[in-house]
Length: 277
Ligand SMILES: Nc1ncnc2c1ncn2[C@@H]1O[C@H](COP(=O)(O)OP(=O)(O)OC[C@H]2O[C@@H]([n+]3cccc(C(=O)O)c3)[C@H](O)[C@@H]2O)[C@@H](O)[C@H]1O
Ligand SMILES: Nc1ncnc2c1ncn2[C@@H]1O[C@H](COP(=O)(O)OP(=O)(O)OP(=O)(O)O)[C@@H](O)[C@H]1O
Ligand SMILES: [Mg+2]
Image (cartoon, rainbow, N blue to C red; front, side, top):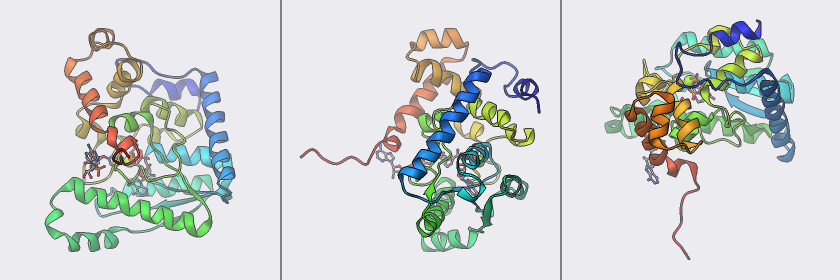
């Protein structure tokens, strides 16, 4: 796949801001992230890493880079389907493991989740609460394997998710490091194409897979190109609200929504607070 053709499909028709990296920057990011993963594993005295494989682009890119860093024997993938997951996406997850040549397991987590649902049956109708049970169950299983095989748990969080709090506290965020944590979503797609991830995986709709039909864009009320742009320019970049609206030509409500998501999720990015001594 040539890089130019991969890049040409990476953005929506008219993104508020083109955050794509240059070829040299992509190579540098790839080197930085693979060294980071190798260092984390070495510093922990671990024998490798484990990660959840969802078929989505964040875990697929992280798996590719981890494989580069650690070799195929260094990575153990776990695909953990629940009843709400699209079977085709779970097949994609297995395809990623197979193409990389890593060891992987498929663990059906619906029976595990059902035990939780039975314990608090009145909570099951809250789809976020129930979906978070799936997410946190995966974290328990990741650490089960990490403990038993002396591995670290690789997170797959990117900058857009981290800053908007679009993750489950002590769920998909319960990890030992986040190798792609400095990349906006647009750049995740771009780097994935750059390292050779098949285009159908690069371009698929992001979903947390917590309930049927869920998509990140529907739930956040914004597409990632818009979230990325507002984060880069306003929340991370420090440009004023008014200048951001002017520069990006986005509605004021979009800027306010991203700021709200970021502020409301501050507690997810810090250690649990304790009172002053
Ligand atoms: N101010 C505060 N200070 C300290 N703690 C506070 C707090 N506000 C809430 N909390 C705690 O946080 C809890 C709520 O946070 P949490 O449990 O995370 O739950 P919540 O943020 O409500 O839900 C998780 C969100 O992340 C999304 N997600 C999850 C997993 C993966 C992905 C993906 O992109 O694939 C997305 C999911 O779709 C949903 O929108 C509360 O129940 C409470 O325990
Ligand atoms: N069914 C699953 N099996 C194994 N791991 C999963 C599953 N669903 C989610 N995960 C883990 O949780 C992480 C967070 O999910 P998230 O949806 O943000 O990322 P993704 O699926 O890799 O990418 P995308 O944003 O494109 O959906 C995944 O990267 C993966 O590590
Ligand atoms: Mg996903």
